[in-house]
Image (cartoon, rainbow, N blue to C red; front, side, top):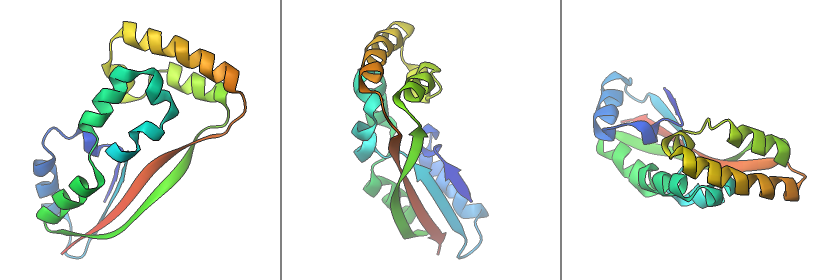
Length: 145
């Protein structure tokens, strides 16, 4: 099973993990691709949207918390890696992507907060030039014991 950038949306992670434990075969694997609380500040755009950053710090799991939750539901950690994936080819592309408001934390803040942050972010992106922009996403592999 593969969970990509969804764990932080689980209203009741324990219920979801119990269901994963129920449907996973013995020695079956679950891969979790997730932004972690420890890496929120590595996302450059986060500093321009403090309300979204606060939301992410609140809802993103910590590394240890995620592992402990899986272990409590009968899974063993088999691996962990931080992958720096290409988010945007340039700062113009970065601005375009953020301006689309596709990230759930940006959707959750007020229109006023988004517009304020976007104006500051636009100034930053136009001044920065260059690129590409890579962002950290963490990959965990668990197996059902």
